[in-house]
Length: 256
Image 1 (cartoon, helix red, strand yellow):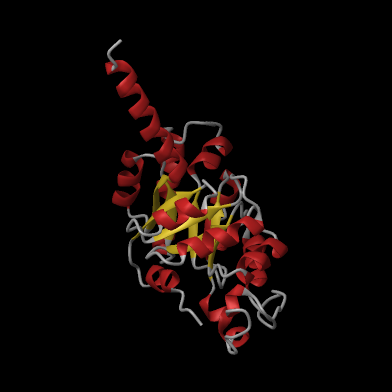
Image 2: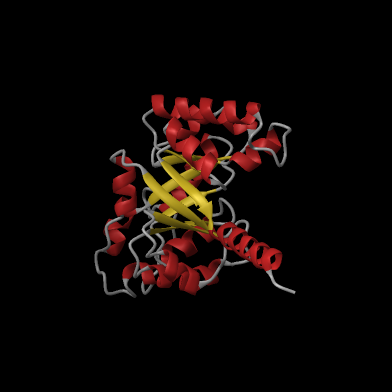
C-alpha cells in the first residue's frame, strides 16, 4: 500500500510548504498538485464540496508531487471513515477542544482493536480490494492532525497534543481571533501572542505545528517563528487577487 510520505516527513522534522484549496475543482487540483508545493489541503468545512466531491479532487491530484490532505467538515466518525475509504491518508480535524475529542478523532481513523473505523472491502484506499494487506497495514499509514481554534482549546493545548495518535497540531488564526474577541483581525497583537505561545508549547512537546496564512507577510512570519507545516496561501485568494489586479490594471490604462 502507498506509504504516507507526508506523515513521515512531518514526523522527521522537515519543513513543509502547502497550499489551502477551496475551489472544489479537479482541474485546479491537478494543476496545483504539480506546482511544487509539499502538500495541498482540500477543505470541506468552509467550501461547498461534500464528501463525494472530494474523490475527484484526490484522483486529479494523484499525478502531482504534492501530498493530498483533507479537512472533513467536522470531527465526525462517518465523515472521517468516508474520506479514508476514498484514499485520503492524512486528515486535518477541525475544532478539537479537548483531549477526549482528540481521542475520538484518533479512534475514528483506526481499525479495531485500536479504533472504531468501519471495514469495507473494495475501496479506493485498498486499490479496490487488490491490496490484500490494506486492513493490516492501514493504521500505520494514517496521518492525523488536529486543529485548535478557540481560547479554551489553547488552554488545553498540552493535553490535546499529548494524545497518542495525534501527529501534529494546527492553529487556526481566524477562529482564534473570533474567540479572543477580535473577529476578522487575526493580526491583533493578542491573537499573535497566543499563536506564538501555542507554537512554543508545541516545540517544547516536540509536536509538529501547522498554521494557515492568507498572505505572504504572514506566511513568512510564521515560518520565521518556526511553524513546521504552513499553508502559505489559499487557491481562491490567489485567483481573486490576480484577477482583480489584472482587471484594475487594464481598466485604468485602457484607451477610450
